[in-house]
Length: 185
Ligand SMILES: [Fe+2]
Image 1 (cartoon, rainbow, N blue to C red):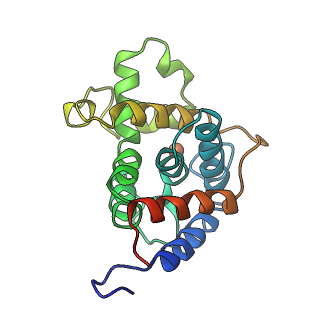
Image 2 (cartoon, rainbow, N blue to C red):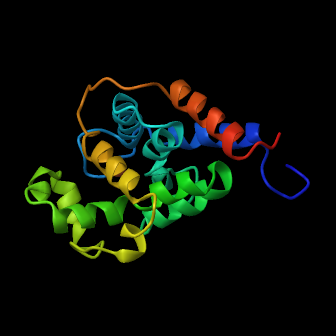
Image 3 (cartoon, rainbow, N blue to C red):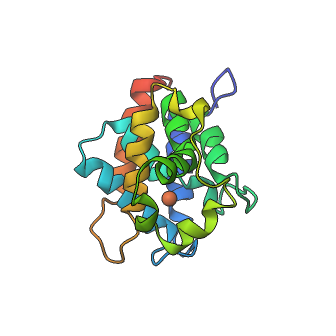
């Protein structure tokens, strides 16, 4: 622990490894578990040439579903991800992960045909998340275009057996983000 009470870089990375691995065997109504979903999301971001922070936000956008973190099983997993990620990996990673539900609601509202591309589970949760809507709190933000990109990685990351980076690969990205954004020991 650092003098200011914040976690050290290595302990953040160790916690992140643990949180990711704890997603093995956790299902949210999709055909793949949450660990494969996280890794495929990171892979889609890498394929798209995303920067490290966006790749990491894609990998960790559903991290609040990790049993290791102890969040309640509720509809706030986007905000819980933001709150967990921001002090560890910086404001942009937290914001992008925290916007992934708002981005779904926006795309359903504004892009014809988008809703038909969603998984059954994603459609089922849409109403609980407030339904189709354009939320100005998010859409006016300078990070918003990247939140929409993240949402598309999320939607494309539900394919059984699809190629994906490893946990080790994601942690290498996390290490770079830590050093770039929060250069504490
Ligand atoms: Fe997701």
